[in-house]
Amino acid sequence: MSVPGPSSPVGALTRPPDSLEAGESAPGTYCRAGLSATSPDEGLIEDLTVEDKAVEQLAEGLLSHYLPDLQRSKQALQELTQNQVVLLDTLEQEISKFKECHSMLDINALFAEAKHYHAKLVNIRKEMLMLHEKTSKLKKRALKLQQKRQKEELEREQQREKEFEREKQLTARPAKRT
Image 1 (cartoon, one colour):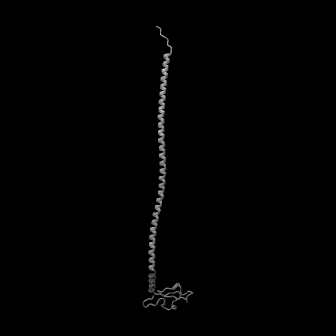
Image 2 (cartoon, one colour):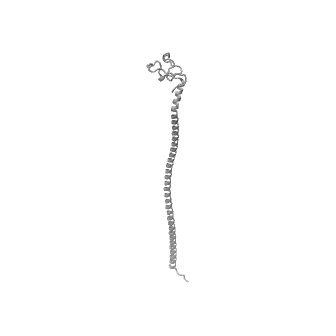
Image 3 (tube, rainbow, N blue to C red):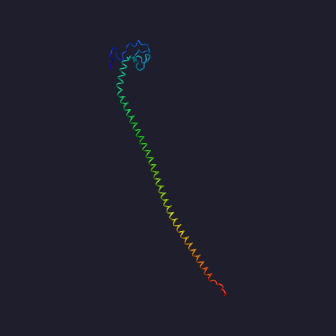
């Protein structure tokens, strides 16, 4: 890339390197790789001076080269984040469905238990009705037997009285003298 204008080309020194003192850099220039004039590599790499405009243009070029990729990456990350949010919502819904399913199993177990106890109650009710019928029959039978005994006792008593009367009549009585 070339720098327009009267400035010196990129990487060119604006004054001789020996005019700078040790550790000093020219205003508006940058030292490459952070080396100072007192570096042991002083003879290998010389300090380069770069103008602000060139740095600005290089920065713009660097940004124009990497910025579209970074923006695409940012967009892709946003899409991934949105997809992740959707997945988390879906997962929460599935978890709630799973919990509902468990609660349904609990409810089904309660209904099965209620059905079992209802059947027991129905059986107890049947037994109670059967026992009530038996006791009613036994009471009727007992009443009939009691009535029969009373009747028999009454008949016996009447029979005794008749026999007593008959014996009384059969007993010898002294005759009246006239």
